[in-house]
Amino acid sequence: MALEPLPLPAPTPHSQPGLPGAFMTYLAANPAILQEIRDFQQQHRLFFCGTQPGDEHTLEQWQSHQTFMAMVERHLHGFLAAVEATEEDFTDALLQMKSGQDPHWRAFDLLLSKVDFEGFAGLLRANTCLCCGSQFATLPP
Image 1 (cartoon, rainbow, N blue to C red):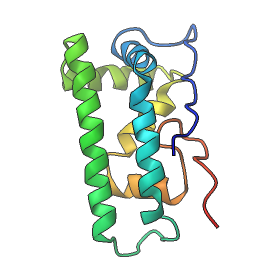
Image 2 (image 1 turned 180 degrees about the vertical axis):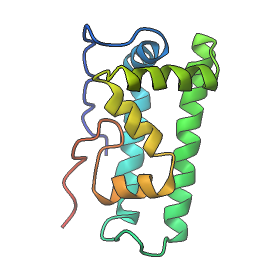
Image 3 (image 1 turned 135 degrees about the horizontal axis):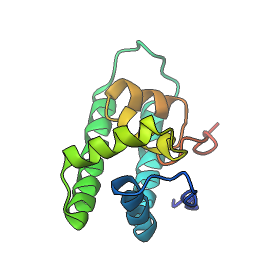
Image 4 (image 1 turned 120 degrees about the vertical axis):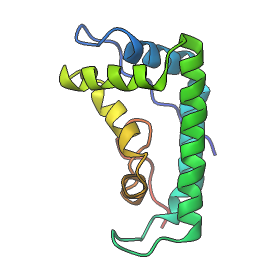
């Protein structure tokens, strides 16, 4: 089941130029990326619902995280190839974005926190959208 895609935030006068801005443009030009992430979350979130921090993790949860990481890496490498940049260039640009308190930092912060299994599990457990950080969808009864 495909969920309605949420629009990306509009650029603001405070938005950082360079790679973070190019990444937002890339995502806007490739809506299938965010849809793939939403579809992934729809399919995998039930592995985490009803669990508590500190619970032993299941094989399905670990596999879900690995699948998500592979998806993020694939899309990140596609973007970096398109703009002819390195991961280090992108990381440096994100650190500048964070220090400048750019309003889009939250979306990038979510991306970076999802790299860690516990952060990823916490977002799925809380039913937080992996794309935008708001409530993902109504949990099944």
